[in-house]
Image 1: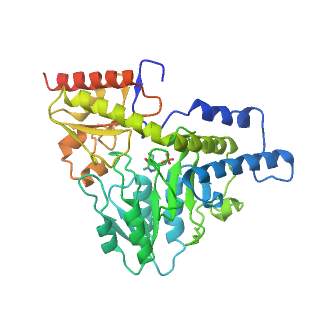
Image 2: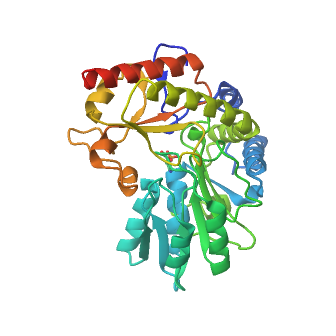
Image 3: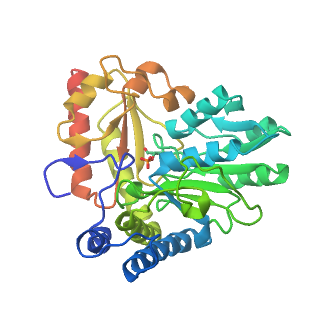
Length: 383
Ligand SMILES: Cc1ncc(COP(=O)(O)O)c(C=O)c1O
């Protein structure tokens, strides 16, 4: 970012990479075609562009292209996975989730509960982690699905999906993962990972807003989902509606780029994150790190500042875009449900900041961000 403001809110959304915009642009400006109208060349070209993007995504995640279902984003993918699976079940009417999930998982589960599905909400530990043992203990003969996020969107903690997936496999239960914050940031290999359904979205990996995907395993086991929107039979009849060609083309390229440079980018972000953390804790006392110290997203730093008012802190961060530890920014802020689930005291949780570093974050920005935060906290503590 070139202006004076500093954007450290990459968990909320990422800027579209110029290389992504470049491949999208012709589909807005010069080319036209509905990917389902393949009776003419325009439609066939649009279809081919969509299928190329589907293949790019499948290659990046090491799955089959037919296993990628395009949606409008991760919220829709989560809804399709969870409701689409449970609504097709007559006998198995039990769902297991956990308290640190995003609202896009908690809310579909809540709706299913109102419709008579038995829902178990597992606790998260002090790092926001889901204990595989607790999953094993919660599984019943009626359990249809377990849903565990790959990476927490607030504190960045990475869940042990491998272990949880193996437990689910042994018990004959399907595993869904909301991997919205993980794809492109940490390795995700669906040829190895025992996950059956996985949600993700383009705008968290330097692609456009408004397009996402759901991975739906086709073999061992073959999964069918009840579509949530009835229509023209698109996306293997699991998600209907005309596909947004430009967005999908951008999503494919964004995914390809993110996975190709994942390792190098993760190393760079980890270094920058350490620099930011160090700069803050060498200047300030009473700062605690939230989330797992090691098993976390490379670009995530989540800190609580003792003895300051969270709202006042946010208002002093002039030109610095970070996210607060409260669930909303109304006059009566609520602590985030994730920090509450982790047992962070309310006063600390309201005085927390989430720093999300990204592809275009520079060292200079990190140094300026640290100086802004240190000055704001000092001022509020009257130091
Ligand atoms: C973990 C997680 N799941 C789901 C979503 C929703 O994604 P989308 O904006 O693509 O609907 C987000 C976005 O904040 C997220 O962080």
